[in-house]
Length: 205
Image 1: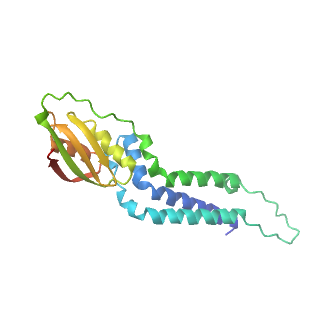
Image 2: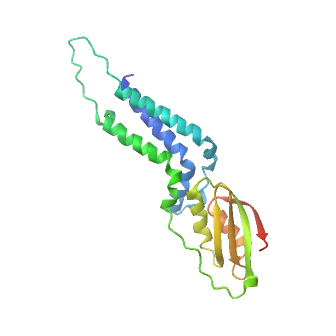
């Protein structure tokens, strides 16, 4: 196997591990854009392995760059060895692939940019006594993209007044008009994203 072949295999493996590292956040965005919202949490189980996949990505690309930059052995013979590297073997291409891998690895930090900005609902409140607040514990959220995905569904529920979602705390707190919607309807909307409500509690306020 030549050095160039090793180089190619190394960066291809690096691209795969980079994509796998952010699969938990890539999937929700693709599901949202493709209208298959329920598939959002399909790869949430990858999240615990993310640090190891990132480390593998770094190792693969470090090896690829080492192979690409190290001095080539001079062949002492009269044979024709003046073979130019192909585009796929060039430093320019490897640079592009490295940038793509970097974008894949850091995807969770900018995933929310792919979701539309939802304003908090403007609901006419006729009776303050009908305003309730509930906390929903949600399983499967791993990044800001997941937060925006959940918010996008909550915002569609008629009667929701306000919401605050956190993937770090694995919950959302929703204020709603009890005469227009219910705690179960909101839980159903959240479950439609693919993330699962594991508990729901009315909060006295």
